[in-house]
Length: 300
Image (cartoon, rainbow, N blue to C red; front, side, top):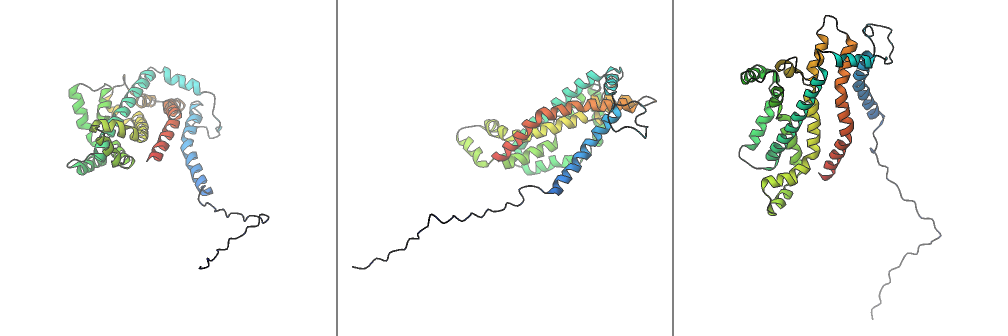
């Protein structure tokens, strides 16, 4: 019989202390002081205009010309805000309602059409699709001012000048929104998921509703927020096409500077009033917006 070589088994003494595991230092897990300093500088630069508006808007007409002014807000903000709201030339409440209606409809329309077009460009194969997307993106290079005169002539012939539809209809679609949703859906939705839906018998529109819309929700929320803010702050076209009895809020507040003597405390108080709805929108929608973005990033 051939002898079997025994394999020696190492004996571990239980009394010997276990060797400590070497911990790997994770580098780059936290940003350095330079990142925090840069973010702090950006934050200060972003907040300072609001603080300056509050500082002047809470004073009186002599605050902006006072070299020895206090850097603490005064106590006249509510009085100045009441002057803005009560000014008959401003029509504050109708202007506020017009801004809410127009900005909300524009944001909803841009999100709807941009999601449909983005889904088509990203996931549907049709002849001339890439070139058509290039043409849509190229329209962003055309300045808005070039189309003001023909657009005003068109709405004048239709009898829509002075009406709120004149600022809503031209902004129902957005080339940037189409490009934004196309790029997002191209990366967020895998082609295998679309093929699985088609195997299950879903039509193209059914696939868009069940697959595309849930996946596009984070990007759609961002697009809606940016479009609402852009439409809210739009001044050029509403100033041209709307009359002074039915303005949007930026156009109405510009009337505060039409007098011979401009009281900048009243003007900046009105500016702060116009930013309050946007700040409330960010406060109430910010948490849902960030959670939607993180959810989309995890799913992607």
